[in-house]
Length: 407
Ligand SMILES: Cc1cc2nc3c(=O)[nH]c(=O)nc-3n(C[C@H](O)[C@H](O)[C@H](O)COP(=O)(O)OP(=O)(O)OC[C@H]3O[C@@H](n4cnc5c(N)ncnc54)[C@H](O)[C@@H]3O)c2cc1C
Image 1 (tube, protein in one colour):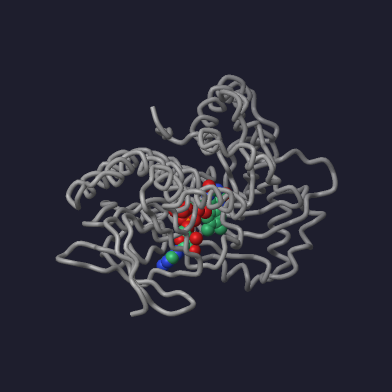
Image 2 (cartoon, helix red, strand yellow):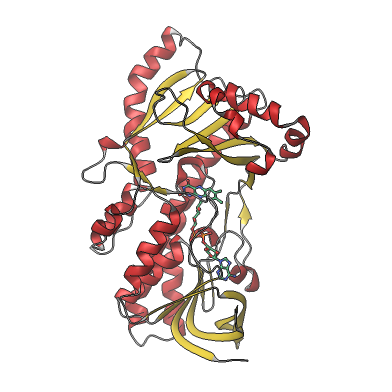
């Protein structure tokens, strides 16, 4: 064994949950090592949405100037086109200023910003290119992790190991925590398309008999996500790329002029939509947060936000304990309090995501609205949509039980 590092907290995973928690603990003077298996934060698309609650947090951390310096794309309104009828479904301007909008920013830029800020604190140690391969144990308690980097294997001993290593968490598996699947009968096909030439307003989703097509606006292109019934991708590949392009064009007619830019299925990436949750987020010496504790579906794009919110809750509850001379029992009790705090908001959001998926997944596709809407539908929309807009803006923007740094 090459060497052994000893620290107070070791965080497996340098995603939104791990980097944010590392930063928040380092600010409290807690020695923290963050381990990220990749050599940088640059990754394929895995979500770019920065929600108002995260921006409020960045303000509180004094990171606004750095954030504003990174190219990003603010959105005040999210439209849904249901059966050809455009509905202004989410209006973030109904939220308090200044962060009454949602921003699209490449996740790696956000992580770089947070990691740079964290590295100003001497107690923060980020190790890129370092993969956790196992946990260390002593008398039934996890006491650290075994890692592999470019130079070989080594050990990191810690009073607490935080599993922030995502939906396929190694730490979680090694300690025998198993998430309960909350069945989502869907997959998502991700691909990019240029923005169509004519002036099409930013549109979050297109609902039609083809199902749901997400078109997430980025400065130079649209990040598209096509929800399909689970396991259908092979059939679609067999049907050929032309059929796929035709489906996309039917789902979103303005995309007909650009859909040829999906050259082949090599440009289309399959993501298995997953909603799951650990019944227990802790084991002696371990706390799971973010996707490792609960994989969220892409519905409403809240995964990053929820990972960050977990980190804030963990830093508030655990920070003072870890900054003191507290021993294992007290640390484990505090870890359990983090689960108690975050389990309910997670369960609520997942419940709503499942309703969305069930609504989309009925085999006939969905027809939420006639086109043109009937008189009854127009009445419901006139009365219902302003209320729904208010509620959905809060739910998407903040999630349930938004966390604050202090107070
Ligand atoms: C295709 C896709 C699209 C998505 N779209 C959105 C969206 O639009 N908006 C949104 O909010 N959310 C979206 N999500 C979800 C979002 O990406 C996650 O919910 C969020 O990133 C979870 O953060 P996390 O820090 O818990 O885990 P992750 O972001 O998964 O980070 C885990 C980190 O741990 C590292 N790691 C894994 N194993 C090890 C190991 N053994 N040792 C060391 N490091 C390890 C990984 O490399 C990774 O960097 C999307 C996800 C996917 C896959």
